[in-house]
Length: 360
Ligand SMILES: *[C@@H]1O[C@H](CO)[C@@H](O)[C@H](O)[C@H]1NC(C)=O
Ligand SMILES: *[C@@H]1O[C@H](CO)[C@@H](O)[C@H](O)[C@H]1NC(C)=O
Image 1 (cartoon, rainbow, N blue to C red):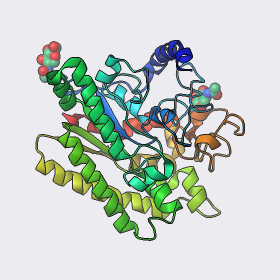
Image 2: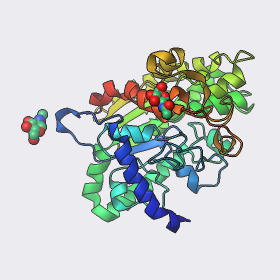
Image 3: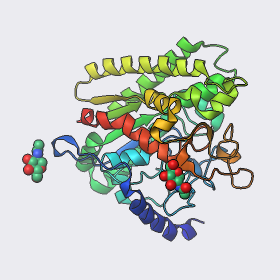
Image 4: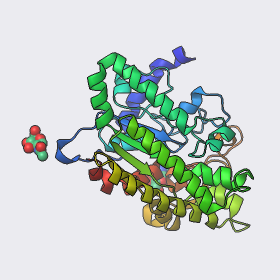
């Protein structure tokens, strides 16, 4: 399987580079800075295919996922019709056009040296979230990062490895599964936590993660806050009543978590003055899109393009049982949970363009 794929993999990567050149162009970095690598941790918003290589039901390495990737019809394990946020952020920083999954067995040294994604769809800050989905926990993502550091040290020596680690940009994008899945859809956490105490718990995991990442040498870290999660199509269906309104409590939980995240990041930055720590707001950008789709060129904001668009995600969005909308560019959401590439391009600009300078 792997052997069969690899020449095609190379071909469609090239095709993608050509096709995606007009998207989300790299911005000029301040003071002629260059970023050697982009390193990403998180969930499906930034997973470029790690779940393909683990035993979980939460996968999407089949059509219609990837129907617009590269030359078309290339499912890669990205939870979208095309690129995901990690790819687009890598372009922004001028690093590369596609950010590969760390678990991809075809990675070359050059791929490692310019960065990878450790993210795993379905995971969360809360270790229970990754356990429920049989996906890669945040602490295991950090363990993979340690292994990654050793790999590049063996290849390029300790000095160059340290330079790469300290000059690279780190992005963390995680947390929505904790609220939307673990807290809202299962009884386990609700039994012991209300929203204020659960968001405290998530914030403490976030804080520990940042401490550890700092300890491993990261000095340019962007943390994407929780999005406007209550208005994604599946959360409307599950928590919005007959009208499929937005799930207010999820939006309030996301907002509350974000305020705690900002607070802990501020105190962290005071403690470690040699570190650039950048809060990246995704709550308001997604809110603007969902509340006023037409203004941003979208027709459909409350359903995904795949199937009914109300609930399907992962294996429930597939080419056998799901009809696909005729033009996904008109949709904010690709499936009932994940944005289309079109929306990701726009969101990426809204989330990060004004913040790039803060990383240097
Ligand atoms: C950036 O590089 C250009 C070309 O090498 C040089 O002329 C310019 O002075 C540099 N700017 C800074 C801020 O270092
Ligand atoms: C899809 O929709 C976009 C945005 O409305 C439009 O620019 C494009 O031409 C459409 N593509 C097709 C094949 O209809």
